[in-house]
Length: 182
Image 1 (cartoon, rainbow, N blue to C red):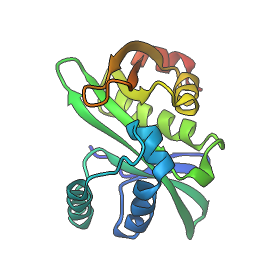
Image 2: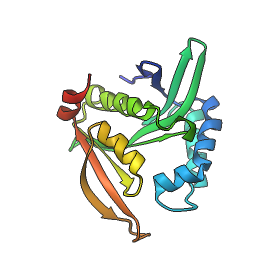
Image 3: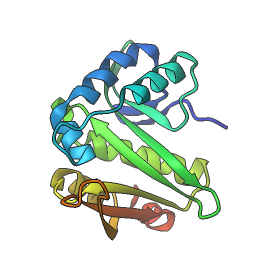
Image 4: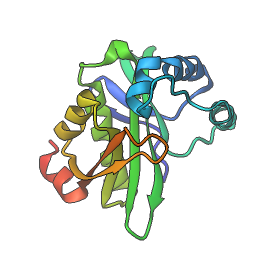
């Protein structure tokens, strides 16, 4: 069964809508966020990836993507970022996750709430056992966020195209998440 909305307090996750595209484009053009997420100065999301995403949103089929929304009241919701899962390995029962918030919402525990909601969905709705992610080793803000959510470093890998860049691979198991979640 597909979940259309996950909520915690005033932060909730929902599938992307056409009206969200202006926010996604703003987030994807943010050079600092691109640097922190992609590990390189002047890194950009590919035009083809953006075109494909727009088509999926238009068709209302965007597997694995959720818009992170602040819910002010019944009629006022504010998209503040996105979170996604991909690369589900069904035999190992694990998936990769990624999150991005608009800079104006950093440091407000929104990312932590969104990651917790996505993990609950993956573990208890999708039946997965593990979630993992890659983060640039210099992105200390993101690393602290993931550690607060219970992730631990499991590996380090060097970027093949940019050998000066090292990625931390971090993961969390369902049993640990269940133990630390309220």
